[in-house]
Structures are given as structure tokens and as C-alpha cells.
Length: 188
Figure 1 (cartoon, rainbow, N blue to C red):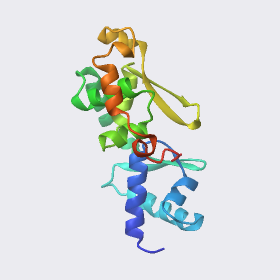
Figure 2: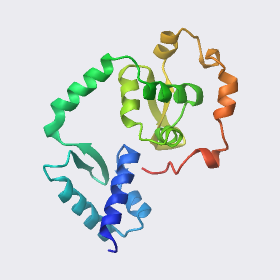
Figure 3: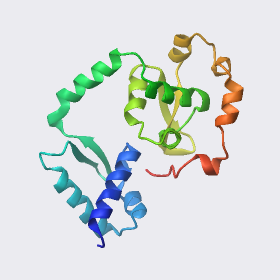
């Protein structure tokens, strides 16, 4: 395999931005590798992540893989999540909530695309707070979409999305043609 360092970096970036379980087959296709080379690359990544100086692991479930954190850091991360949930909404959380409220239902891939950063933690935070909910995309059952909950509307004092400030104007300005607004969401 040519340039294993580059391929390792590509795989790491792909798993990071996807944020959820990704099929090995799809990952191999995106990295332009056959099954044998992909399996070799994945083994090398697992070996490198096994180092004490790394906080991540590869989680495997049959034919899917995902980046996760090492069990040794569970207490640290549990404390961090508790603290995050007890604080007011951050600017990043408000940004994600706005995207979902004005454009929802929306995929996490589109949220990431619009923000330019991985939004996994922020989306989970909003779900734990009960402000958004996740459901299967009827067009792609292996993908999820996010929408505001009734609790969200109750919390901000509106009956529906149309009552959000400047809803129609912002919805139109944020909506762009499908082909430019959405990255390849068939990454599953």
C-alpha cells in the first residue's frame, strides 16, 4: 500500500467527521482500498491507538467501525459531560440548535458541513437535554435526522417552528440547492 501514513490520517479523519458507526466496506471504498489493504490499515490504526499516549480506540461491531474513547478515561469524560449538561447552552450548542430548528429535520452530516466542524458531542448534549430528537431517515434507513422536540418549543415559548423569529426569511436564506448543501451522506 502506498503512503500508509496518509491513508491512516485519511481513515482517522473519516471516522472522526462521521462520528457514528461506519461500514468497513464504505470506508474502504472512500479510501480507494481493497478489502485486504483496508483490513491491514485498520489493524495498523488499532495498534497505534493502543499506545498509552492515545485516548482513542477503534470500536468494531461486525462489519462496522467507529472511533471511541478508551475505557480508562470513562470517569473523566463522565465528569465532563455532567458539567456540560449543568451549564447554560454554549454558543456552539445554540448554533447547532438553530440549524436544527430552522432547517430540520436535518442530518448530522449537514450540520457538520454547515458548521465546518464535527458536531457529535453537541448533538448528543442537545439530545440529553431533551431539546432535539433523532429518528431514522425514511429515505435512508441507516441514516438519522434531527428535529426540535416539543420540549424545545415549550422552553422557548413558541407553538411551532413558524413562530421562531424571522423563520421564513432565515429558512429561505439558509436553504441552498440540494447538490451544494449536502455532502455525501451515504457514508454508513
